[in-house]
Amino acid sequence: MHLEFEERQDRIDQLSKLLSVMQDVARKLANESHGRSYDKARELNEILHRARLQMDAIETEERWQAQMERRRAPRANFES
Image (cartoon, rainbow, N blue to C red; front, side):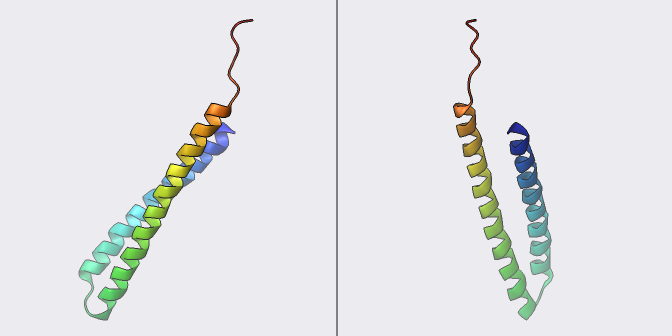
């Protein structure tokens, strides 16, 4: 169970980093764009921003679930 959590966290981290790089490149594109292409680049930036917000929500939910799983896990009894 713990390995699955680590794998999910790793994937979430990878996606967050990828989205961050994509946002940086999209910002540069928007700054370099002129005319009609600027509106499309700005729209792309808005989509990427919403995607990052969704990734933040996923990460928060994963942390919450991990805390709940830890609370439910049986505790070792050292009174033997």
